[in-house]
Image 1 (cartoon, rainbow, N blue to C red):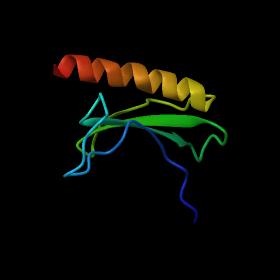
Image 2 (image 1 turned 90 degrees about the vertical axis):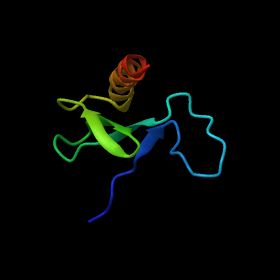
Image 3 (image 1 turned 120 degrees about the vertical axis):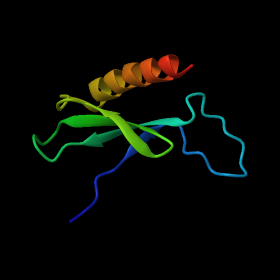
Length: 80
């Protein structure tokens, strides 16, 4: 079974390196769905722990990324 490609918005924090990610400690991942094929979902993690994900599939990677980015911005704003 092949693993789906994961696209992250931002970067993971690596100890000892500078962190240029403005949304640290949050990361956004946009992933293709197995069902329905051709759709995408998003997930937000804080320090690697899942804290929010899309409720359903999105018809395009772009729409999933836009919805995920909006949710990421809400998480980041509410955490401040």
